[in-house]
Image 1 (tube, helix red, strand yellow):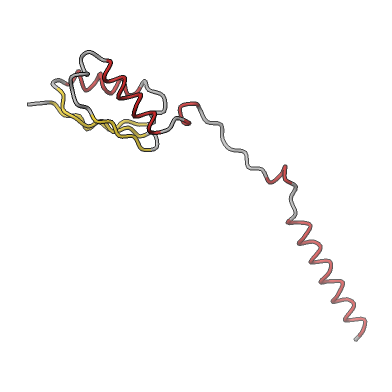
Image 2: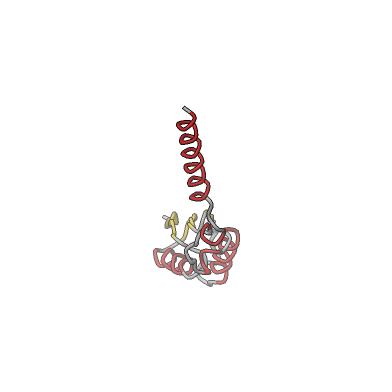
Length: 112
């Protein structure tokens, strides 16, 4: 019986040691490598909104229109009424050229 108790003790000790050693990772191996991101992905939504609004106000054909710009996680929503389809196209082109813009949701309409 004494021998059986010693065998159980050593078995538990070996299993415990294996679990503790196997779960103990060095800090270098535990680091997570984040995917590299472009500078555009690091632009805050408020900055994207400001930059798009500024670009629209600087355009002589668009500055007269009240175009709302709402940005959420790089997704830009353009809301407003313009006179022509070419103005909508120009607004989208200006928005697309702004840093931090991932996608554009066009809710611009043409005045009837």
